[in-house]
Image 1: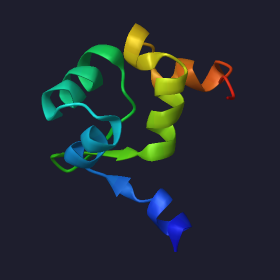
Image 2 (image 1 turned 60 degrees about the horizontal axis):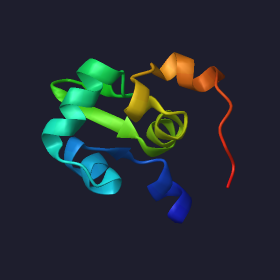
Image 3 (image 1 turned 135 degrees about the horizontal axis):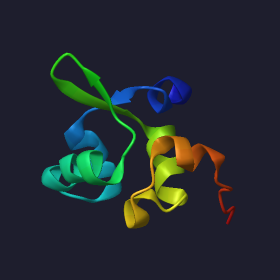
Image 4 (image 1 turned 90 degrees about the vertical axis):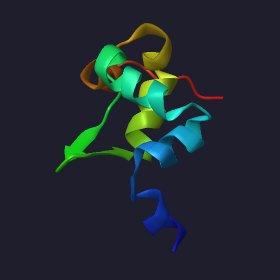
Length: 77
């Protein structure tokens, strides 16, 4: 059951809660920093794994795109 939840599409509010940021910051990161997001009708939706990879690759800090994040090595803790 947990694997189904991991693959679920998240809303702006859900991804904001997950990352600990405000809704306005989510929209800003989409437009200014290339945060990986998918527009479904008029709603933005997110895949947790894509956002995690983007954040871990420094996307939130540097504004890299999702395509760039995919080619960057991810640090393992």
